[in-house]
Length: 86
Length: 354
Image (cartoon, rainbow over all chains, first blue to last red; front, top):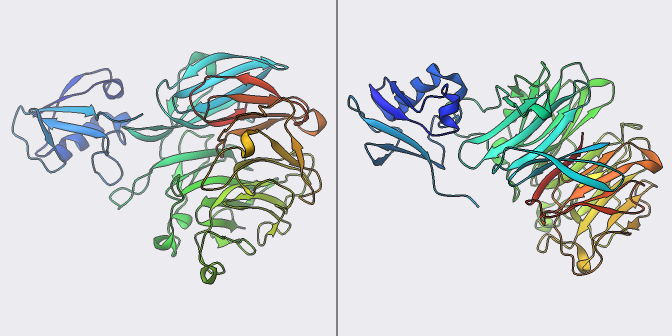
């Protein structure tokens, strides 16, 4: 199981939890499993294309990763908004 | 007491006021772009279209603005696994049946709710239009920004999209056809103007007292239709510019329309450094300047498409508009005289009277 770390407002959509253990072999699978466990978060990280939103960054063990990134047990996934905006 | 919902680049501001005196009573969605906010007067429910730069577009609703507890509406998404994602939500409009609402957004989409706005479904017929692969977005995206219902008849609908023109339905949105005859897109090559789908409508409103009549602000043009949107005639003569975005009509007067001209598409500010609203009461035959009380010197404002609103009707109709400068202006006498309702807000995206 991977360890997913979330910040507000995503953590609020996950029942107030900032850290969750979620099953999945890839980043996409973990994020989809997260949506199933916490439906309120659906559409916030992954869009309808089942792609990570353009201005959301996902790091695995500190490395910026994509949907297809494969995971090992206890990998740490951080979901963080990108440094952008105006 | 008037309650104004002001969507801005940095949140939703609620202004409350009597006469010409307004104050900020609440702020929601701090830091987030609020494209549009309105209150469904049938249910009293408030809606806000919020486009997070990070987490995408959502619609939120609340039945108690003071409680500041907004719920996310469900179902506002494109089909999963496709090539596109929902980009922005531009408008929420009550329909002509109990609990029916419509929402328009980009890329050129229409959603429907039949439970008062809690859950929504994509209008598949419109999403699957055969010409969709040829559609092009305007500068603000391919936005469905105007949804004109027909009073008392839920079967008749008119949509306007930047930049895919006018679409009409006589069967409640099960099928659609164009309503673009007479529109003149001078931004296209001459040989393409008759046949192009790239028709950049900026705003469209139906006159409820004469529903076969609609008014339109185009990307270079102001038009009227007297046949329910099938065809259009220019009514721009007499305006300082035929470019602009917002439009308001007096619901009791089917000959009325109000526009706020900007210089041109290459210079989207109020002409001559003067802020002026233009009013017609004869269906566009003549236009009257309404600027008494508005900035008339060194004022180069931009007023966006959803940032002009009304409350009431007739000679005592109130008008309100906001600019990207963060100023909000109001009139309590149908535009004859104006006052400043707010200054120094974030850039204003939308204004609606609750």
